[in-house]
Image 1: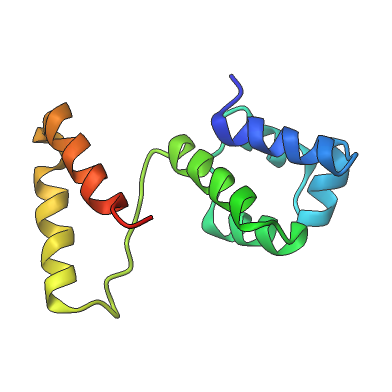
Image 2: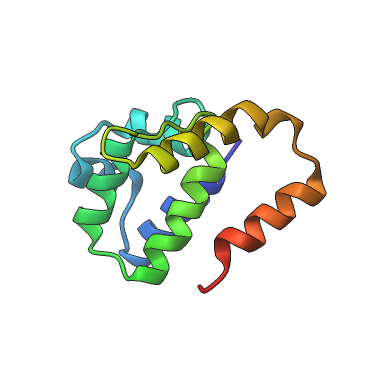
Length: 118
């Protein structure tokens, strides 16, 4: 099954007139690995995403669209808390503990709050 990120990668390949093998070669990975990412058989890493952004020198809009697809595609998210303030660390722990119990209404409110000012 083609993932949201897989769709974006295919669009990017079409824009650059590339086949799967071309993109994989540019990113320093195998065609099989890239195909597995597109089809949801392998989860893309942050290293993969960084290589993609650097290699293709994407516009801010393209990068944001692809990042959104990446976060839609992955099952787990990790947050590096080593350089965060105590308040930011507390927020991340509370959010992680309560995440599974949030109602759809609460989720919408949080999204609106976090997207405020964009």
